[in-house]
Length: 229
Image 1 (spheres, rainbow, N blue to C red):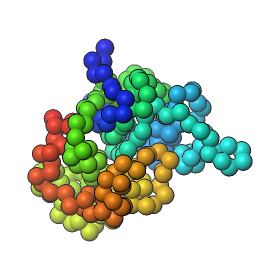
Image 2 (cartoon, helix red, strand yellow):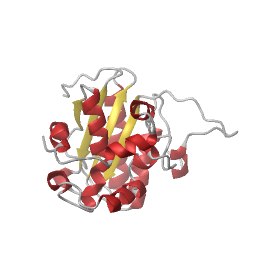
Image 3 (cartoon, rainbow, N blue to C red):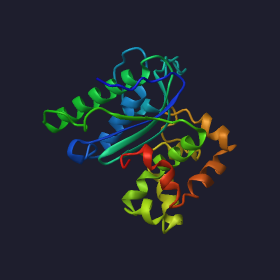
Image 4 (cartoon, one colour):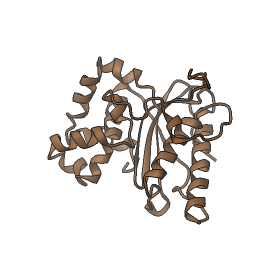
C-alpha cells in the first residue's frame, strides 16, 4: 500500500525506472507512445489513444480545443532510456495516483505486447517526493531538464559540465523532454503547464540562463530528491 498522501495544489517529483535498470524506451516509437499517454491519460474521463500528432493538443472536428478535466499539471518531464522524471502538481484528490496507475499500466501493456514479453516493466511502484519550497522546485526543474547531459557527459553531476555550448545545443534539440518548449520551441506544448516557472523567472531567456548556470554544488541541493538519495 502506498503511504504517501498527495495534497492538491502541491508539487511532487515523480520518477521510476525499468526493472533491473533495463531500458524502457527502445526506439523513437516508444518515446512517442509514452508522451501520448502523458497527454491522453491526464484526464478524469477514460480516453482512447489517438495518432501521435494529437499529443500537440486534443481538438474537436472543427479544430477547437476540447475542454479537459486534468488530474495533474505536468510542469516538466524528461524521458531517458531506462527511466523518466515528472514534476507534477496535483489538481484533484487522488489525481497523481490515478494518473500514474493509468500511465504505468498503459505503457507496460503497450511495451509487453510490442516486445512479446510478460511481467512487470518498472522497478516497483513509482517514487514520489514532495517539493517543499520554491528553491527546491526551480533547482529540481533544472535537474530534470539537464538529465540528458548524462548521454554526453556521464559524470556531469560530480564533475560539472565541460562543454556548455555543445550541451546547450543538445538539450535544446532533445525531443523527449519539456525543455525545448520552455525555450519557445513547439515540441509537445500541450503536455506541460509552463506558466509557473516562466512567471517565476520573468521570461524564457532568464529560465534558460538559470538552467545553463548549473554548478557542481547545485547537485547537493537536489540529490535528496532523486534516485541517488
